[in-house]
Image (cartoon, rainbow, N blue to C red; front, side, top):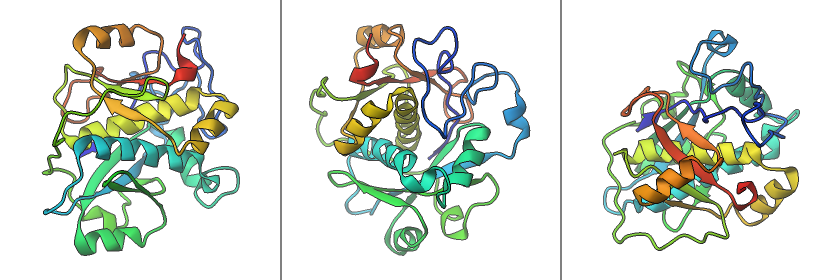
Length: 261
């Protein structure tokens, strides 16, 4: 499905960003951030990836929007889990991942493949019908064998009906209407958008979001609304160009109520 790097228009905490990071596990600085185009020390560090596996049975695949929203909530669940912080069992892997470039890979599994993947350490998040499991970051060339053999591409997901209008009182991850992304690509991008929003929030806002079960929507706006969003000052994901689309393409705007100007 997709391997990505994320980069906002301006790194959180930079002079041109109105927001500041507060996460103890997101080492973002304007000088050496995981989102810069040019080479930095992060490129010299060992590169890690956050694996995500979506459960897709041939006879009953999840709806596309359900899968996107469930992936975003899975990323948030992992970022907020106590095992990802301090002396937690996943904390060192999280630090290694965030010291390098931020990448995510979405793979699909069914039947016995899903059961084997589910036995590995991680977190499974369920949507209306979608199931997504997120695992601790792994080296780019060091995937567990149960995950390494899973397919990255070849699955298309659709919405049986157009999604309803989002609740604007809750967070919305807006996908670019200008880009044609596969389901896996869009899932990874939704996860990036959720992560950028999480990094920008205060601890109180994070706690409230967590208590809501990470309520959010993923939607595609019309072109005029998209343009307004991209210049609004909200966190913007720009793709690194590893797969499917050109480097620098704006893919997601993370619209959390607490981040609106």
